[in-house]
Length: 191
Image (cartoon, rainbow, N blue to C red; front, side):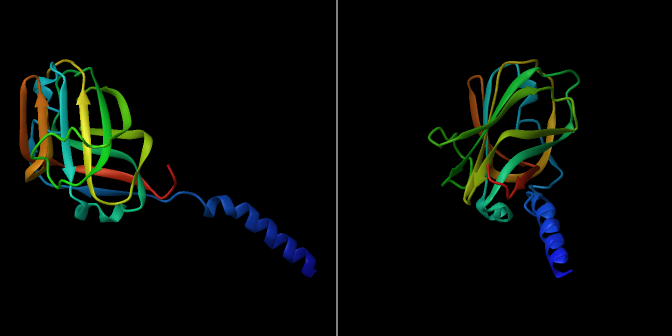
């Protein structure tokens, strides 16, 4: 009888092992405010020109994700586009020393995590990364580049923050006193 119980327990443990080893997924929302900006993360009114925009999230706002793998992000719109932008967006992430976006960082070592078509017509811009990003700790740079598309005005929720982001389109470059409301999804599963 003891042999059967031991065998049954071993078999049960074998069946439960995959469930116990599954990844833990969570989310962290940063800059959860009601201020709005038409410029960041994407300036919809000028999607007819390629853009290169950046947001720097200070390390102290991301401590819950230290040692995790970022698997996606979501931006929240207060005003959606009336027609599709039809623009391809490339998102890359990197860890930087600077704690703000007072200038466009062109020396950061970035990892591309997603590229795809974006319309601007949904209440959220929800991006599930093609490849996760191993976030150890530090200031996180989110680099957003767009191709030429159709210009349609939009606006995003967030908070006012001095040099929270940087906007570049056509021949215009300027820091923005805004950080968009961003939900990061992350997992403890290796990338």
